[in-house]
Length: 92
Image (cartoon, rainbow, N blue to C red; front, side, top):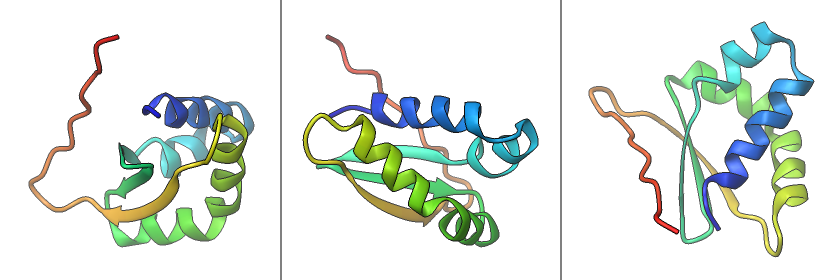
C-alpha cells in the first residue's frame, strides 16, 4: 500500500468540503505510511483535536472505500517543532 490512498482521500475531501474548511483543517496534515499504519501529522494540538473530532469517521470511511484489502490503521500525531516531513516517491 502506498500514500496514493491518502491522495485519494485528499481529493475526495477537497470535493466534499468548502475550500476554507479544506484549507484550514485538512491541507495542513502531512501523511506517512509504514507497515499499514497511516500517520497524520497536524501542525498543533488544536488542529489535531479538531480533525479527530470532526473528520475521524469520514477519514475511516474513505480509507475503507479506497483500500483494496485491509485499510490502514490511522494514527494522529503533532509535528515536532523544527522537523520537516518529507515524502519519498517509490520507483515502480
